[in-house]
Length: 86
Image (cartoon, rainbow, N blue to C red; front, side, top):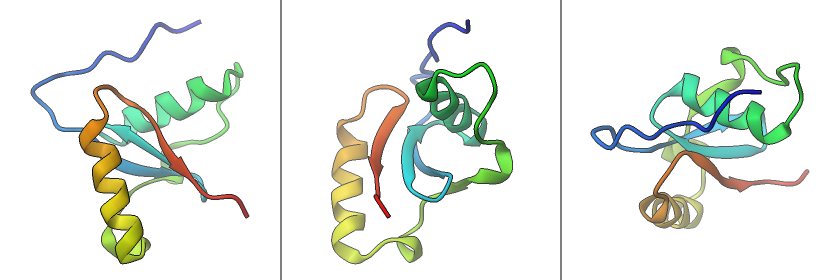
C-alpha cells in the first residue's frame, strides 16, 4: 500500500480532470492520477495518464469556473475537488 501524497509547498495546486467526471487538486498530472487511483483503493489503477487533463475555463461554464477557483483556493493538499454525475 502506498503512503500519502506529500505536498510540495513551493508548487501551486492546479485542477485536473481524471476520467470524464472527477476533478482533483494536484501539482501535476502524475500526482492527480496517483490521488485519484488511491481514492478508488484498488490495487489495479483505474486510470492512466491519458485520462488526466488540466481543467480549463473552456471545459467548464463561467459559474463552475468561479466555484472551482474558490474550492481550489481553500484546498491545502492534493485531493478530490468536484465531480459530475451522468
